[in-house]
Image (cartoon, rainbow, N blue to C red; front, side, top):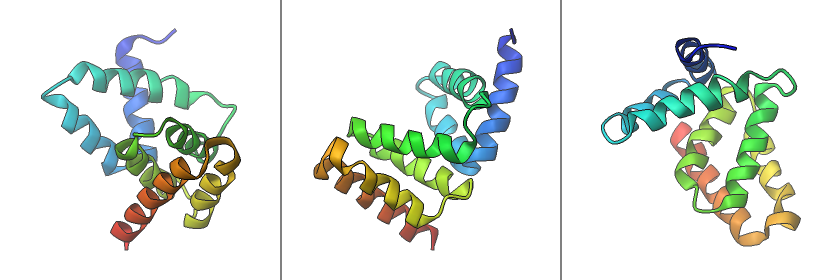
Length: 126
């Protein structure tokens, strides 16, 4: 089992691979209000869960997009993960199609919200 320092190092490396500068922005935004939350995100989510070999990062991002769309009210996290999805090689069409695939399970309102966040991220990337 890895110690906290190893998890943090491994998590930071994975976060930078997936999110690039967006991940750093999230951590900086948490620094003055809840640095521990940032440590949990890095150590647990990226140091442990994202390290598992059964899914590659593209697959993990698709699952994450669907999960965030399903929850609703996660527009900020959707922005980060749509950017991350583009960063790991998903296309705009794949991202939108993942949301469309969710319509029978989530309904139109949640999918529309997710697609409008994607539209925003895509426009900012141009």
